[in-house]
Amino acid sequence: MAGTSGRIADKMAFVTGGASGLGLDIVRRFVAEGASVVIADIDAAAGEALAAELGQRFVKLDVSNEADWLAALDTCERIDILVNNAGITTHGSIEDLTIDAFRHEFSVDVDGVFLGCKHIIPKMKDHGGSVINMSSMCGVRAQGDLAAYNAAKAAVTHLTKSVALHYARKGYGIRCNSVHPGAIHTPILDKVMAQVDDPQALYDGWVATHPIGRLGKPEEISAIVLYLASDESAFATGAEFRVDGGSSL
Image 1 (cartoon, helix red, strand yellow):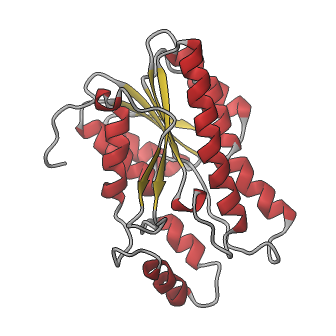
Image 2 (image 1 turned 180 degrees about the horizontal axis):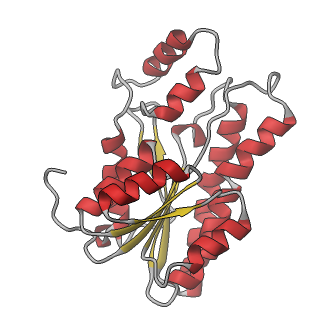
């Protein structure tokens, strides 16, 4: 990756959902900037292939499963950076969604962040670190056809603030911030478009909600994640970092 400068050299990072989409770009950027990375993902084939390519380590992780978290973190002696990136996007209004679909969205997007923030403490509290939770523009600006996703990402936003306060008051030296991307063209968007009758109309609608006139690129999100992972952001905690092309305005 061009322009790298070792901004997180010698740090150990743990990235959930690291085998594809935004997680994949974050992993590549972290490695290019000198970090060692544990790639955690439910997709073992993709995760193992990426780990082999980059010379890093893969662990299989269902972020909604507490036993999985404990087993995965038990393989790590020290972690300096946790990126709670794994997530899903369920399309549907309050009228269309089933309760099972709503609960599944929360089990991945909220339970997964809760478990990461909770169980990372023993791996970080003795030396400090940075926890980065992936929220969304939808965590601050609702859309009628994304009821479950809106609610889940809003929960991540406020959970992040509560966690940041706890870490700070306990003197752990751990920072916790949330990142709020706009619509970024990754495989997860393709999965959402596959849920509707007119994918192109949905895509065009996403573009229209961004004053900047386009969707975002994965590297535009991994850049802010790198900043939050580095010591450059040492005074930032409990904050919302919006990288959304103006869509939350």
